[in-house]
Image (cartoon, rainbow, N blue to C red; front, side, top):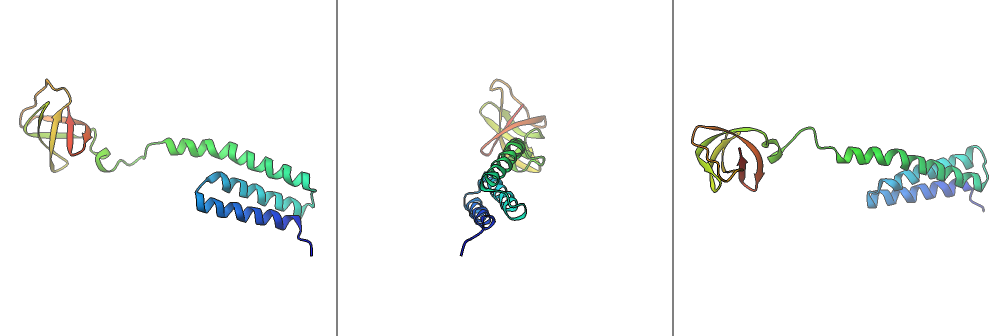
Length: 143
């Protein structure tokens, strides 16, 4: 009993799909789509082995060339909704206890935080409003 070429391509696609799930490498998914296209070429159009390999290579390469740069661009983008300490950067706070280069206390987002002035020579007195420029551990860096 001889197995048709389109079945071998589907087996290859399934193997690549399993590899995708195990390794989370999206390129394997694109190669699996190329194998499905080669399977369709073999099953529907009866293309010879060389044509099947060419279809596999062209579809896989095209997907990688188009999808990878888009995915890379999306991966490099910052999230639109800042959470955690990132959401506190750029907010205003009120000085509770004198803040200088060595420390102090502020009220930030309804909570009391330890704070330190970005410019070590600068001092902020109680009641002043300051801007949070960074968070280092549990200390807000203010200007």
